[in-house]
Image (tube, rainbow, N blue to C red):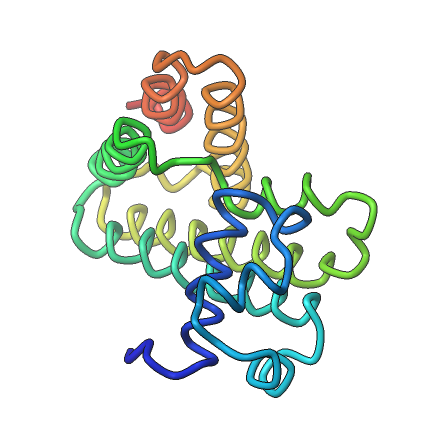
Length: 191
């Protein structure tokens, strides 16, 4: 996708600033300056900062779903899938370009106005859980998981393992939590 138009530049800049500095601390003027856009362009595409926040969440949702789906298609087993995802997260953490789950961060940063974004955040969780369930069903069909395991429960627990370990890593800066992501998931699936 060409990111040269004002809408795309504003959204790309918001994605960077909201993720690294937070929604609340990023002002419209900073977004305009950093994106090289004009105020008129901003309000033409995003009637409010809240609308930009929703567009940011949608962009992040699509990116995460694309990533986990790509890894699912590339990796044959659930163990290989989580190993690839964990390696990616470790690389991001090593490059200092990792600030955790964009949805958990955004939710925490906007807790006092959460109702403005609750729909988008819930849809993201729902879509991610649905994707995980599809993956688990596929692995069952291919004989990589026992069929008596609930894909819904596996999906929820996978999300909890991800969010919990990522948050603990961010709190402590101890890489053992990034390693635990993979270990906890393998314990979950009996691998």
